[in-house]
Length: 179
Image (cartoon, rainbow, N blue to C red):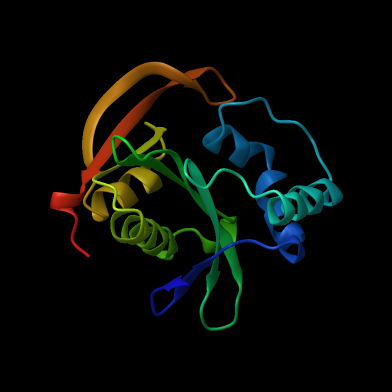
C-alpha cells in the first residue's frame, strides 16, 4: 500500500486484533491519544470491532485508519489515522500510536511522512493538522522533522491523567510539504 524501505501502512484486518488490542488496551497510551475515558476491553471486542469494519466500513470520507508494520518481517509497530477529513475545506487531522518497543527508532517520523503522502497525494488535501500534549516531546520533534509548523498552544486543554495539560497545535500546508 504505502511504504518506505522500513515501514508499511495497510488497513487492519480482524487477524490484527491481538496487536491492535495492545494499543487500545493500554490506559497510559489512551491518555495521550484519546479524548474519551478509558474503558477496559478484551481482545475479542477488538476483533469484533475490526470485523465490523470489514462488513460495515466507517465513512472513509471523514476517517481512515492504517496499521503500521515493518517491511522486513511484518512486525507490528502501531496504528495511525487521518480523521476529521473535510473534503470541502480539504484538510484533515492525523494521529499515530506506536507500541513502546517501536518508539525512539525513527518509525514515527516515517509513519507521519507516509500519512502526509497519503493525505496530500491520494486525498488531494491542502492542509494537515496534528495536536499533541505540550509535554510529548517525541511527537513534537516528529511533527517538526516532517515540516509541521507550531501554530499555537491551548492552555490546560487536555486531560493527561494527572490534571489538565497544554495542547500544542501543528499544521502542514501542501505547498510547504516536501515529498
